[in-house]
Amino acid sequence: MSQSVDIDDLREWLENVEAAETAQFLLGAIAHREGTSVSDLASWYGRSSDEITDWLDELERRPLPVSVAAREGVDFEALADASGLNRQTIVDWFGSLTTSDIDEAADVIRRYSQQNPGPLLGGTESRVFYLDYEVIADHGWSLDDENLFEKAGEADLDLEAYGRFLVKPGESILEAAEKRGRSWPYACRGGACSNCAVIVTQGDVAMPGQTVLTENQVTQFNARLACVGVPATSEVHLVYNVQHLDQFEDLQLPSPLTDAEPLQ
Image 1 (cartoon, rainbow, N blue to C red):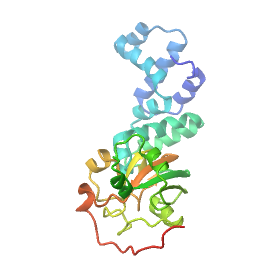
Image 2 (image 1 turned 180 degrees about the vertical axis):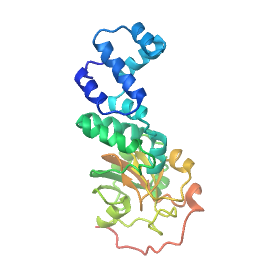
Image 3 (image 1 turned 90 degrees about the vertical axis):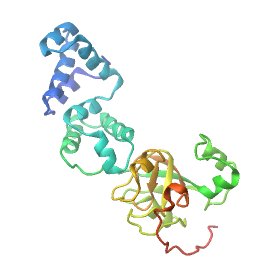
């Protein structure tokens, strides 16, 4: 078992969980730390030695709050769907609770283990790096290029085509872009069309309230809507102006956007 998981922490977690499976998991870990063998634990709990070994191995490879959350009933998949996020982003977020006090972390897990806990939203500032899709097409680049943003940084592009800005808590990506002088496509501003669609190439963006993108567009293309999109990671790389791509074109609405003054 990882020595980073202190036995006192295991005991404190034990006081803050509700599910019998979680309590058994923690009790087994504590007993093993105190010298109980895997075979004895298997006998006590009516499980195979392989299952007990898997428990102990899990504490070496997975943050403890993630293990607890899974056993307490947090549905990572449903929470990802509700938030418009990738499952791994949700798992990583629960893993970050290792830096919180255990009673506070347990309260968070308890809240999200309840039915319909609501989406998970970012609550910290995030730096968004953006690139206009037209630049990719003009240069013969590809969305799949691993060094796409490095290429853009070396291409002497103007600020409308490539750059970065800060998104503050409570701001959508579109709001932040507009407040910082960018002129991006939009129409409904409520998550019901694809005019403001972006493709995320790094990081993740929560999307509460969107009603138009399909699961395939979200999971396979990493598409998000800037009007309701909220950064869920400290840094996000995205390509905007993708609304004319085949997979989004049928979802557009007439746009109220007028020509804006170019950025200086």
